[in-house]
Figure (cartoon, rainbow, N blue to C red):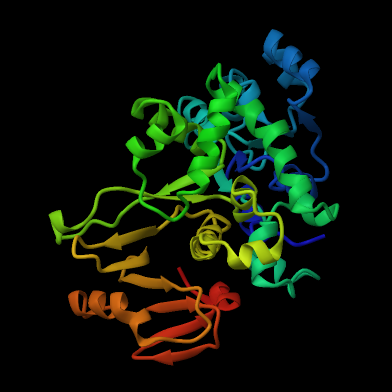
Length: 386
């Protein structure tokens, strides 16, 4: 079994908070990890409709059976239960590590929690396997193209399922069901088209009007559907960084997916050679590296500190990592041979911010250091401290 980096932080939080929440995409390993870390807690899945009926019909009686705690899986199916959990938690003010709840819908769950378990629950966002996690397993030797194609979903690795078999079925059996639960979309085929169009925009600034025109829906609908993608951990918007440069900074977010394998499937990429020659390979590689930086933060219970930066003049930096003492630039290139032009954006940023101590270039070539910038091979991205 591949060790999850988030395990350490979850154990720490369980000693401080009455409840722990594991949020993330379906089949990202939330249930497996919860059972592994808390083997003595009874496990209740709300995918089972009988459990849903029992919990909703008499929540107090339902919770009375779990006074010593439990794992509640897919809690978003019974959000009403959270307010009753609050009462049980408050009746045991010194109790920690009582409940572990999981959810594959982000915004819905957080909305419910904000009204009930605020201050009583600590969250960890568990995404599919990271490069750091896979590097400790027998899958550490897979090529870059294979990693982009496979993505990080645990079941794909555990059951040795090929991406062309796994992802289309994942989309059918999970995503579309959740879409109906989040928002009643009458025309799912139109939403499928929207998903595929989004995949063709990976790594690009989001033009809602253009996506709407290509999908056949209005801009308001597109923005609503982006909310669904984020709520179900399919895609996210990377926001631009703002500083005193003011109006010269673009205001449009960029689009990335929570898993490159899923994005490849939507692009109908089904083998490594297709990844290698695909015109969006650079964007997929960029997505992969950004995900690694994001997962490192989330696995430690921290919020994302990632932004991108671009001037109207065209100078840009793929990632800015906001820290208390500095804002660290990171450039991402698919090239194997280093070119000094790769550092153009970083050097410009350093001139604007002379106190910057760290900067990174991640590419597919050999590691080195030039002008106080660490040049890292993509497998070394796990060494970046963000």
